[in-house]
Every structure is written in C-alpha cells, then in structure tokens.
Image 1 (cartoon, chains in turn purple, cyan):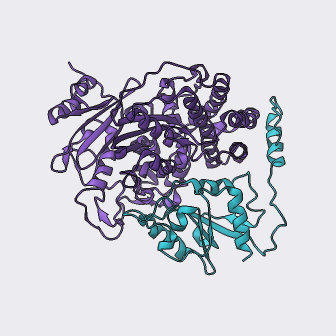
Image 2: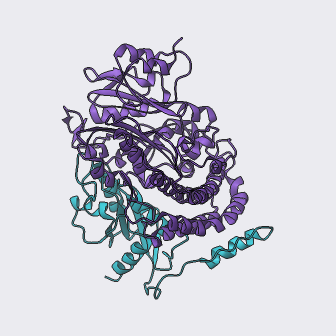
Image 3: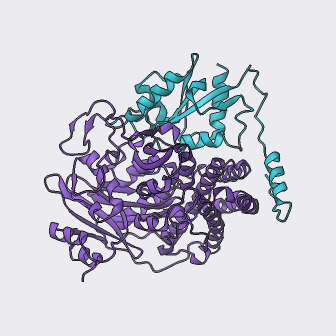
Length: 479
Length: 161
C-alpha cells in the first residue's frame, strides 16, 4: 500500500519540494489509501493545478497539467480545497471536476472589468454585482473586521445553520501586479499584503526567494527576522485580544491591551523602525540602518512589566469567553487550521519549531485545547510571554552559527513564516530573475471552511464577536 | 510611562488605577464645538493598515472623543465618512450605500495613500485606484499608514476649515 507522499515523490522532481505528476499519478494521489497529508493550500492557473501539503513538518508540492481548462478536483479528497478551487475559477476560469460545494464565487462578485481576468483568454465583464444567496446577509461594513468580507447565512428560528463567504470586496489583484517583477521590486507590495502580517508575509516571501536562489540567510539575518516576527506577534496578539475583550464588554482588559500595543508601536518608532514594522524585511535581510538590539531591548522594556496585569485581567474576564465560538479539534485537524486558533483547538503545529537557529526552549506556551474563545485568548497571552523569552534568548546569542546547508538553486522556492495569526506560505518561481509564477497562502484561508461549524447555532448578531476572536484578515484571504 | 509590576489581591484595583492614570488627554485646547463630529469609517480593500490605525485611535490609548470626534457604527449617524483602502470595484457600491445613508452636510475624507489614488494598488480589473476615480478628493490624510497621532492631528485641522 503506497501512501500519498510516496505517490507524489514518484513524479518528476522539478524543485526542492515540487513534483510534477501526470494525470494518472494525480488521480492516484487523490485516491491514496490512509489519511491524507494536511492541505496547506491549493491553486491553479491556465497551465497547472497545484497542491501544497505538509509531510511531517516539511512542505511537499505536487502539480499537474490543466487540460482544456479542467483538472480533477482536489476537494474530492481534501475538504479544505474548495476555496482554492473557487478562486482558481474566478481568476483563470479553470474548472475543478467533481468538486465539492456549490461552486459559488469566492472573489468575483460581478464588478470586475472582465471575467477570468488572469486567464490567457479572459471573458467579457459580467456587469453589475451579483447578490449572494442565503436568507440573511452580513454586509462587509457590519462584520467588525478590518476589511470587507461579505457573509450570507441560512438562518432557522434566529440561529445560523449555514454560512457562505465572499471576499471580492477585499481582492486587489495582487498576483497580477507581481508577475514579471524582480523579487526586490515586488517586496514593497508584499510588505502590504495585510496588516495582519507586515513582517510575516515579507519574511515568508524572502525565504521562498532565498530558496529559489539557492541561498541561506546568515545567522545574523535569521535572528533579526525572528526578532521582528516576535515583536509583530506580541503587537497583533494584543490587537486581537482587545477586539475579543470588547466583544464581551471587557473594556478594562481591552484598555490594557490598547496601551501595551501602542507602547510597542512607539518603541519601534523611537528606535527608527516603522510603528508596525512595515518595510523592515528585505529579500536579502532587513532595512539598512535597522539596529535590532536596541529595538528588541526597547520593546522588551515596555512590554515585560505589563504582562502581570494582562494575566490578572484575563483571569477575571475569561469566564465570559467560556464555550464561545468553539472550533472543534477534528475540524482544526481536518482543515489544517494553524496559529493560535488551531493550537487552541489541540493542533500542535507551530512552524517556528522547524526553523534553523530557533531557541526551542523559549517556546513553552501550552494551554487549554477546548477550542473556544477563552482558550484562544489564554494562548495569545502565553505566547506573548514566550515571545519575550525568545527575544531574551536571541539577544543572548544573536548571530549564533549553525550548519544549515544551502539548497541547490532551482529558481523555485517555498517559504513559510509562523505569523501571529498562523502559518503564512509563499511559493515563488523565477525566470531570468523575474517572478514567473507566485502563490500566497494566508492562514485565514484555512479558517473559512470551518466557519460554518463554528458559527452554527448563534444568532447573526454574535458573528462579529466570534470573528474577532479568531483573528481573520480579509486582505490576506482575498489578496 | 513607568510601569510597576503589582500582583496579589489588589492587582485588579491597580489595573483600574492604571487605566485611569493612562487616560489620554487631547493636545491643545478642547475644541469649541456645539457637538462632536461623528465619524464613520469604511475599509475599501487595502492592506487594512490604515483602518487598524484608526481603530487604535478609537481605542483607549488616544483621546479621540476629547478632541471632539465620535466613532459611530451607522452611517446615518455620521457627519464625516473616512475611507481607507484602494477602493475595489466591488466596494464602490458599499461606499455609495454609506454616503447616501448619511445626513446632509456630510464630508468625505480619504485616509492613507491607497484611499487617495490607489497607492501601491492603482486601477486594475479589481480596483478603481482610490477615491479619485469616483470623485475629486478634496480632503485627505497622507501616509502608508498614517499613525493615529497623524490622523488625529489631520482631523483636527480639517475640523477648523
């Protein structure tokens, strides 16, 4: 009996972790016996369909040719693949055969200047906006999120039974803007993918580009990247904690979170960095002039003394979050939900643990795995404590050498960064130094198929509070 | 701001006292207006950085209300519409909906580079390239993203026009 990983590796290896499969091998992968590998992302363009899986803690990418705009659907085997298939249809008009779901648009709500805009044969514009199905709508401006995401619900007796999401309002056509540029030209835009990852997104991109070029960043660069990521983690956790707290009228906790986040932002600005660390990561390192040691010291100095009060306030207000917006452990596993939301539902994945040079002894955060808003809030707090410890360890041994070997240059790379809201993945293929193909997977995408189960039974009025507690960024999802 | 770690049975009381002590004050004189200017904020498809900075401005660390502004959650209650983001084509209808719901005497303000002209997201199949594609932009706050202090200062200046 051959497992999914072996079937994929029977294909033609074209990059470090990428295998081309013929249609027979693709079918065999989808029918592989045993448990499926966790799905990180799937996408398709005019030429190929791709699936990014996780084997242990290593990425494994398989792709197959798209023929006559069709390929065999990944959702026939991977429950979380439906969103990627809908996006591929909206952007390229390629159809996933035997796909699950209702095939509703993920991005194209009808207002674009053409249909299948990234296809080599785009269609005419569809005209006006298409109304979403469902008996109740939550308009983009009513979700309580930082960006436009539209929800439609089937509601029975005042309680949600089913949820559908459309992210067209937040779609800016990022992929089309980056193709044909050098990675360096692309970086400013990558740094503006989402405020939910001003460090995590460019860092995952920089790692993908480095792998494509057959480079390994030196230990000094690696540690600066780690430190920036931990500062961002604390800041975003505080943002999500404040929003969650306000959802249950815990204003005092929210106030302390607001002040702590602002203190971090001011510390960054005073040390010459941008408030939210935008534009700090570059393809080959970090912004010139960035002094990481005083930056880390300043952030640590303003954040460490605030932890005790935050923990005490969390203890007081946490019962209000008991049993609210539960993400079942089986769903977290099934849809490979990462970040705090996945870990609070019992999923152990934290991509920082596989990084070369990681000070593993600092990553101790554990907590409830009940999957509710209380578990997520508690874990965010525990992770802030870990981030402070990790920053101390990095300062204590900054630039510590290790023996990570450089990969062969294949002009193709996969990069990951464990952002505050989960694992951010980038896949990049270069040709003559320019980006020929490109894919981003924001951690919010993994949450979409789980939302229905998470929100079932609640009135629509509770949805904004539930969404606030899972930390979801429409900009990251829609790109 | 000096923080002293306090634990024990009085820690909650200290947390209240800290929150009161940190309460921000508006720079300069309190504006002499009959009532606060009510602002409604819409994100129209950017990176969300500007929106999150306005959200911070509306949080506890800034004196938005003391400076004479109130964030409202219904455009029908708003005097000013603050727009962030690159204005995606899908969001144009949402902007129109909010604008029509606002009472007479309303103003439109673009916050951040994207909202003015698209910034890094100029016009494409999915985006209009900022507010300028819909209407002349007379009031704007630059930055990518502007800080809460920048936004508050600019709002105060615009209120004096």
